[in-house]
Each structure stands twice: as C-alpha cells, then as structure tokens.
Image 1 (cartoon, helix red, strand yellow):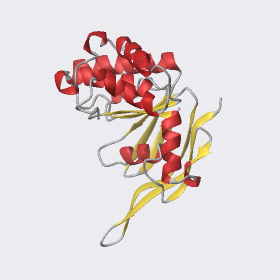
Image 2 (cartoon, helix red, strand yellow):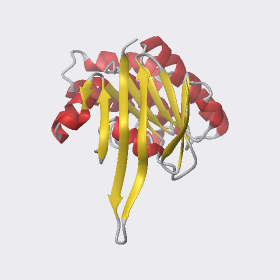
Image 3 (tube, rainbow, N blue to C red):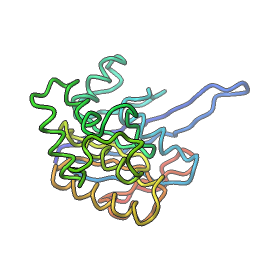
Image 4 (cartoon, rainbow, N blue to C red):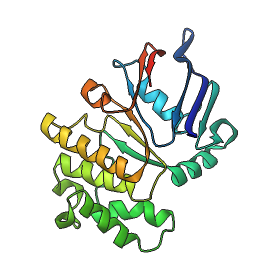
Length: 225
C-alpha cells in the first residue's frame, strides 16, 4: 500500500543564547495510506513538534517529509498551506472553534474556503453524524466541551481529507467524555478511510491505533507497526 507519510532523517533544531538545541533527532518512518499512528511520549519529548513538521506547520532543519507524495521541503509556506487545505484535517485539544460562529458555520467554513458546492447541507449532515443535529445554531460558548469537540470532528472530516492530524483530542475532556469522543473519532476515521496521526499521552488511546511511535528526549526509541 502506498505511503501517505514518508519521513527520512528528520531533524529539528532551534538556536538558544548558549547553543543550538536539538528538539528532534534523525527521525525516519512511513505511514501507509489508511493506517493509524499514535505518537506517544512524555511531556517535552517532541510529539507536537513532530506533528507540526508532518503537517507542514513547521519547517525541518534537516531531512525530509513527504505528505501524500509531495515533498514539503520543496514547497513555499503558501504551497504547504494549499497542500494542507487539499489533503489534511485537524483536531486539537483546545477545539479551536471560532467563538462567534455557530456549530453549523464552523463546519461550513473549510467547505466554503475549498469552494465545495452546498456547504450548508454537507455541514448539517456531518453534525447529524456526530449527534448534534439539534445544536446547529449554537455557538461554542453554548456547548459543552464534548459537544465542542464533536463540532471539531465534523469540521475536520467534512471536507473529505486524506489524512487527519489529532493533537491530544481528548486531553481537555473528562475520562467518560474522552472515551466517547475517542470512539467517535475512530468510527468516523474507519468509515472515511482516512489516514490518522494521533498525538497522545494516553496509552489506552494509543493502543487503539495500528502503529505506535514512541519519542524520548526528541529521539525515536520504538516504532511498533
């Protein structure tokens, strides 16, 4: 099966007042199309930095990332943004919904930006799929944390991404709500056939992914496929 992500000798360094600090050390791995990968490790191990590099939100100091067959290092910042819009969806711990937009409008936004026809109908269908058919016109402040993350899931999946990046998607939820959201995430991902890359400190959540990549102090210490 074709690789959705291919990483070769990836390194990330940042300058400090004393010396150069290496955040990631020579990371190499591949993720097959339709697979699910959990990136795990303690706080400060480099998980979120690696996710940002895979998604083209940050630029590597050395090495290369190929996302959906495109070398990120060969693209400008605008080019990376276009590739993300065409191929990727995102779910974050903090939901990152626009506070003045309704649930329906939040889900419609990426569809409208992509020029998809009938964005309202598509957004409403996805909100129904995540159990929020009765909450279309509620703003984020009128929704619980679990409901906000359901909106975020609908927004991420609605444009039909090839790959979904999820950064601690249950991290700000209580254990019961987090388990419900995790069930929904994996159900939607399986139905859509999306490639999933999940950053988490939750070992139970990580165990639900097909593969697990473990980081420690910026180095890959294991990759269980």
